[in-house]
Length: 147
Image 1 (tube, rainbow, N blue to C red):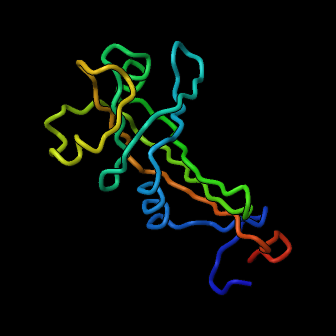
Image 2: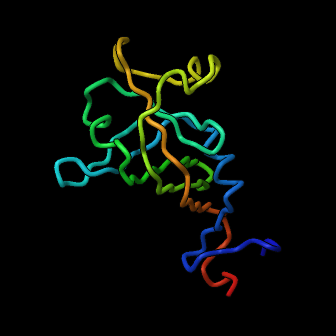
């Protein structure tokens, strides 16, 4: 068993905040859970981690822009290796709010991907107030979980 590794009841390694933030910086595709028209929605989004925030660019007037105005949202991203049967997932619950382009420096703006047509886009920032992460570790099972 790995020393000092905290494991949940399903045998998944629990990740601390620092590791979750590090993993958020290794991928650019996630899923955003929000409420739109009183119904839950999950949308795939391109994102960047900028400091301890998640930054998404969206088209002006989109459902994401309308639904993410100071709303509590869920954000999830992950990675999985089918060959090695390893992977991780990070889940964030935070407040989403619009950000002016001036709120990002030139490097951050250049790195913020967008698949929507160019034009009057909107940047949405999500705080990372609540964050949790899990990692699949081969050979680590719930029977070996720490109390």
